Each structure stands twice: as structure tokens, then as C-alpha cells.
Image (cartoon, rainbow, N blue to C red; front, top):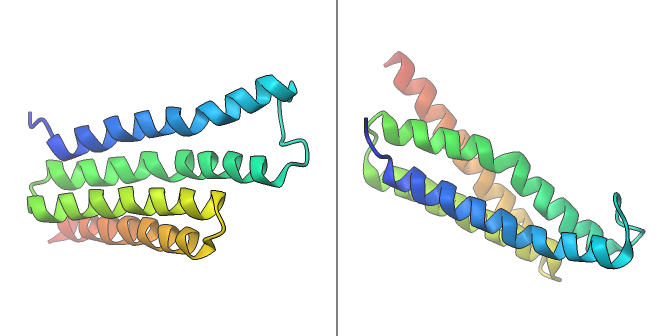
Length: 128
């Protein structure tokens, strides 16, 4: 069985990234004793949503990229998808937490692009 090096790095980095963006949420919950919700704090809400958005899109992206890598697609294609997804997630976080909302939109465009291109490539590969 192949080791899927790109997918291994992407999944490992995603796990670390999720923990890192979760720390501020956990610390804030402990400090404010909020077990749920954001207490009406818009910045806290944005951080919670950035974490949730990451958790929503990342598993499927890793699966798609892993299947592409496993099925022998060109390494440059696999790396390109992984890099675009990683950049998209970072831009999304920047856009959610800062005043640069265009970064959020660009992050989602990259994320959607990876899922559409990767998903399309897998469907094409299955039939041709």
C-alpha cells in the first residue's frame, strides 16, 4: 500500500491547526464560564465559526486529496490541491478574525475550488 505522503502531511498539519485554533476558544470558555454559545461577543463568534468551518470542510478535502493521491494522479496535481486547500483555510481564518474580509471570500473560493476540481477528477477517473 502506498504511504500517501501528501495526504499524510496534510492530515497531520490539519490536526495541529485545529488544535491551535481551538485553544483560544477553550481558554475563552474557561475564562467566561460559557459552556456554549458566544455570550454575544462578535469576535468570539467569528473564532467559533472559523473553527467550525474548518471542521466542516477539512475531512472531505483530506479524503478527496487522499483518493486522488492513492489513484496515481500526478504528484504536482496532488500537491497543488493540498497547497490550495491549505492556503484557503488560512485565508479564511484571517478573513474571519481580521478586517480583511476579502481573505475570507478568497479562502472559500480556494476551498470550493479544491472540492470541485478534486471531486470532478475522481468522478472522471471512475468512468474513464
